[in-house]
Length: 166
Image 1 (tube, rainbow, N blue to C red):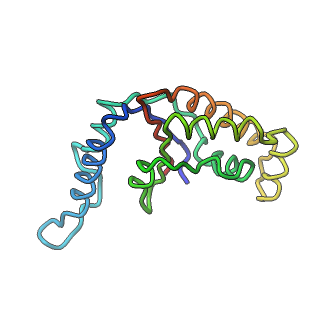
Image 2: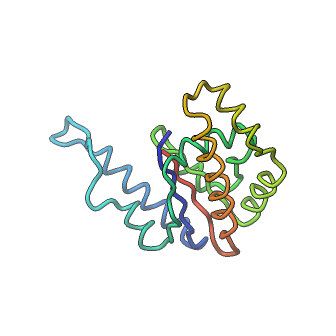
Image 3: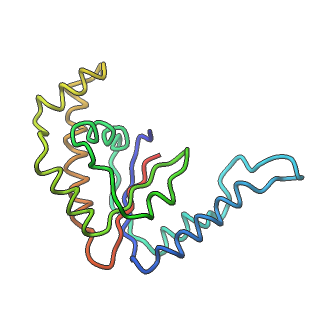
């Protein structure tokens, strides 16, 4: 899991062009140099990232939110599940994407609101995972929960929220 997760707001009308940019990026990675070697580094320009940054709006990142999201999913089962297909179509073995339409964002916010995110519950999960930095990392998980709620709250009609972790 990545140390930093990011969240983008994308106009819903641009989902298909975003997928096309992702396919172009994947094709560049699969291209073999001299007929033998795959590309080993990101292409420049990167069609997917360029499209995402040109047509979407990235919300602030938070250090360690990628790892903290794993613990949030343990505390709030189903939090990072969404029926919106964009995230599923973008995810691969190296990166995880979850996309949220307004209804799935509201559902995730409801899950967060009903979950036991008390300090004791968070610390119990961290202890069960044998973390050495339980008190300090519990702060990170709490901050991540607040940030995710803030991100999800900004997904409105005509937009898709795209959570990238990986």
